[in-house]
Length: 603
Image (cartoon, rainbow, N blue to C red; front, side):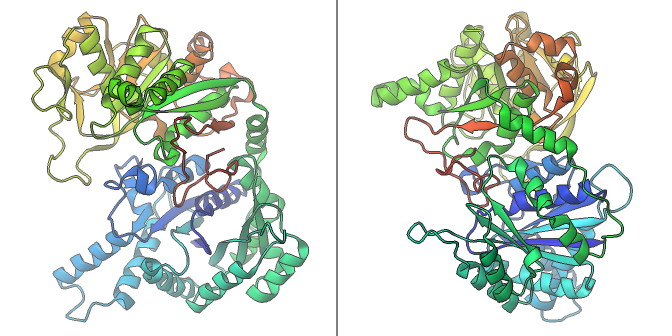
């Protein structure tokens, strides 16, 4: 097994995740099998209980692992299926060490950071690297490891020490360290400054790790004299100093690395030059070109509670983007804070209320994503009501589907106090109830999580056609509450069709309004399995309906490659700032925050 470690210096949010994903893609294009590991130094055992405002979205894996959003980027770039063990946190490591200590595994020794914690980290890396993630048998050829945070952070010290030991343990020719650093340009003098990177590399070397390759983030390509200076002071060959300058979209990054011969530098360090081939990135290049030339817009309103931070809905954005390119449309996302659609806002801030409704009404489609808690619920219900009554394409995901059911109960069935027991435990018409599989007291890892099978009970429906007339689909879940099965007959008699259910028939998975052009809700999260070139079926349906192409897509049973030449699957996203003043911020460790249009808004 060969290992590539990606670390970051100077500041956080430089794009280590995109860099690690792009390196993995480049090595895969060279004919190697690649797996990924993300190390997060925080003490949480997983990302499940963290607010999206803290750390962006929680990405859910097939095995139910709730992990850092960078693993979603690895899955999308490399088209692999990772496991919860591919996300290492300090919490997991300390938990395992303490469990071993309680069992007496350390034979009465004093348990210390070195060697016990560092040893546990190394064993975890070796074990996780051997897990097949690409559907083939046997381990991968190369494991790309991303160390979260910034060199110098106190919480990452045990991991840096462990990785220093690990590089010695696996030996030369099996370990390559790529350090992502910042080369800022000061407006006053207009020159690229190398001192921050020099200090970062010096700190890294002082901790026992020597970089083989420098990947320098800057606004433009590094000048030759700057490369020479970095080479001299950082002890890295000039040909191993790469520039990750600002590009129109992140799909250019693997091509940028290829053009600078990054693969040759990595393969040389790993003694794989004679094994690997020249990288084949034809399809990726074509996808990137399509991405750049899209101009006809499709406007989608995302009505949620975390609209102030676009990383909260990163996979949703990517799924919309994949579907938009399949339909040859430029995605324009209109962020609508759900609370601003509510009557209370009309009284307190009428201008904000009007702006929110103008955004909603100016959109070609409406998406209500997943979420927890009762803030903004009434606004989401009003958005679903608007989409249903005005025949605007609508997709509800997880809570979004439950919102659509509550709206239908209130305004079609006339059950005006209908609600979810999550928001009103005493409601007389509980159309969404707590599911028996979960726990009300322990928050972490207690939901219905991971891949579950949904069976289509109605085969002649839009959803089944979008899934290529499949009789069942496997999608990822993350929820505690779901539709009350005792009210299903009442809903269906009024025209709301529950076309997808679980194997017992008691859990409602997909809803549709047959009388509507496209009104679909899914209890699962289809965005987590969307890939470039393979858009999620339900997101494809939303974009197709919003751009007047749904009939063509359904005739081809949702096969985007039949609908359009090449079936190329990624496109340009424009994400606007909320005009009501909620600027969209880029999160710490953001995947796209580096490649922005200058104001922290994803581009």
